[in-house]
Length: 124
Image 1 (cartoon, one colour):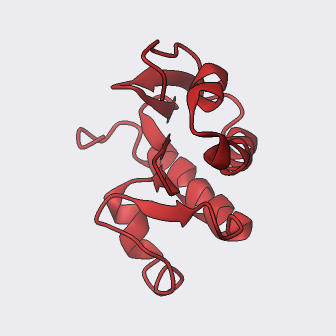
Image 2 (spheres, helix red, strand yellow):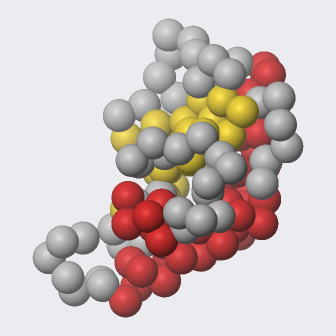
């Protein structure tokens, strides 16, 4: 990433390593299609979607994109994520493999539904 701090997701993608930009663009397009009315913002140097609370985020790294839904969502997709590298908070999408678009879409849709159902919950 460059030293200039991006203020939009498009700027963030353009500042990312060239090998990661196709994955970032694809993940961004999927998330935007799932949450078209969500606020898009950069928080802590990372692209976030908020509607009205945190939905998900994504970020560029040396060899992968991190997709960050909620921890509970990752747990809910445990079986489907078994073949993918995950942490408690992230699904890693390596640049040398295609983006698992259907899986990312399903996870993102789950996040949107969960946030809308718990809109008044103090946890969110």
